[in-house]
Amino acid sequence: MWRERIAEHLLASADLQRRAAEMAPESISQAATIIVDCYRAAGKVLICGNGGSAADAQHMAAEFLNRLNADFDRPGLPAIALTTDTSFLTSYANDFNFEGVFERQVLALSNPGDVLIGITTSGSSRNVLKAIAAAREKSVRTISLSGQGGAISDLVDCAVVVPSRDTQHVQECLLSIEHIICDVVERTLFGTEPG
Image (cartoon, rainbow, N blue to C red; front, side, top):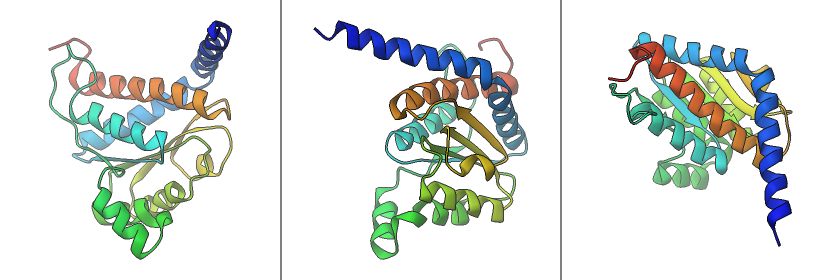
């Protein structure tokens, strides 16, 4: 009964990934290079986003800190998802507002030379935009992962843009891009061969 809808969704997602493969390799490579430079200078990566993008932030931080590929043994890379401290997130949102939850962490936790990755499907998440502005104040390099539209692409050092406004397909494509960035970073830092 759902076979046609299932096939349509998978094919639309695959088509978007194909278009991203044509349009985004340069920006993905630039993002990975910024992160490599950060790690070579003993910096750390901070990552933020809302909803599915919050889950992506945690996923990406875990890939850096642990490892992406099970057969690729390497040291952990310092990465923090700014989405995980529920006590801070809820206390700050309660005492002030939700728009500042990532900005406050960037101001308190980052150092010059670190990197902030802002993930926002729409490119317009207010709390992510405020975090990007705070990062620039702290001389922290900035990367955005987003769909088309929104202001974020004009505010960051490197914008990786998926050519769509369809939230679910953008999220599906961004997960692949996040994995690719992690793969390029770990293999650039530690060599291309496992072990």
